[in-house]
Image 1 (cartoon, helix red, strand yellow):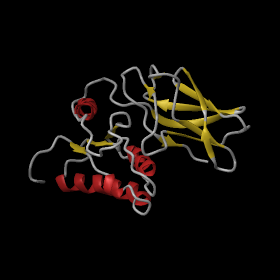
Image 2 (cartoon, one colour; image 1 turned 45 degrees about the horizontal axis):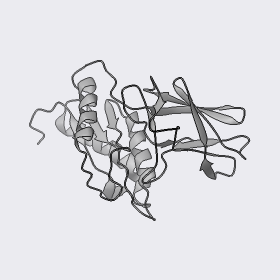
Image 3 (cartoon, helix red, strand yellow; image 1 turned 90 degrees about the horizontal axis):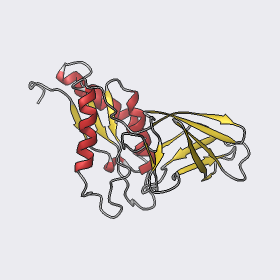
Image 4 (tube, helix red, strand yellow; image 1 turned 45 degrees about the vertical axis):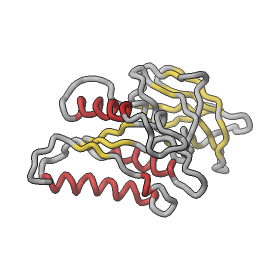
Length: 217
């Protein structure tokens, strides 16, 4: 295919790599896949747009949260974008019926990266977490108009020095979310949507969902 002209790549893959032995190396392999395709076409950093794994009840012995995190980390590669689909999967069928939403979110990214339009194309992406007394303030990119859908902010967990995560109370403050939990005086880490089929509710003003993530210790 490389002799043909190319404007960008839409990439949807990862389920077969969401196992405990393969997920830890996925970020490195995926980054090299992107670079090797770009080398093959010889057109520089052509836009590479990919789909993060959707929600699905994968069952025990899986690493779907870790695979999603590897995909999120791949955004460090230049001229890439990720369509978050944690809210439109089918928990009991890996072949979800809602493909239109996936295509729409990829199209938003293509309009920005490939065609130069100025619009919001991504849901909130974790940037950093800062300590504030007995809480953590979570900062996001693409965070204009943060809001929870369907009720209170859901899907956040925090951990103390022992590394054990517990459900957190979360409230939105502007482009940030403040999280805390009873019994953890000084939380050290935060994660969101860290399950194969998590209950999540955080969106931005463009109606795009926040990506699952975990912070460092």
